[in-house]
Image 1 (cartoon, rainbow, N blue to C red):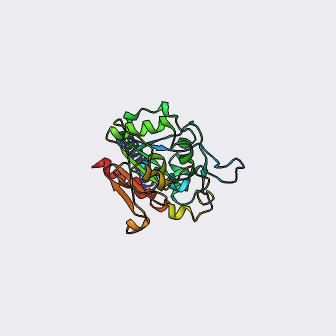
Image 2: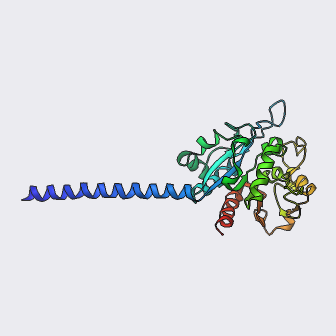
Image 3: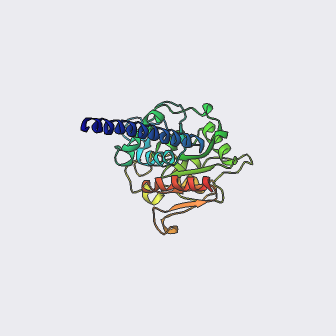
Length: 264
């Protein structure tokens, strides 16, 4: 009798385990289906590794300004593609810690970013938003890349959203719309400010740059939001469909605000 009861209990455990496994797989499949169905977001990255010929000053992309937004996008159900001027693998600075480590290990960040698309491989109609993170690289090969600038303009004019952090807004400052006006003209935008640039040795106090983020935004008609204009230097600035912030701690918040705008 005891043996029969033990066998029945074992059988119930097997049935329960199989049921739980099927239930779990269905839910995972459902989540993955939701991720694809919510739409796509494009992240622009740079191929430029160094600012100088001696290769002493790294340009590249700042991992902490790209990986956290990527995590926010995919965890909210959006598919993400990376695009760079030349495609393929792109250089990153900073060590992977915290959420950057998580998204690299569990959310296919490396696979995506090591196979970045070229501009001519991207169909603007597929994307609901564009995001550009920091790192100096974008000021060197994104800010003057007409294919990328045209791509961002097309997404924006298709009711898409443009977001950026740090030095990223210095690149999308050059986006021109079909009416010939700069996308940032008359818009409140922020990014890595001159007051901080001239105190940092990263680009020799800005002397290695053709233009600074702040100067480029102001030159093209943006209403640049400096530290004195904001309640907190980590504030996120939103003007219509342009979302920006100065420094890396707020990069994930920019991503979250992009999603809020899309969902609304």
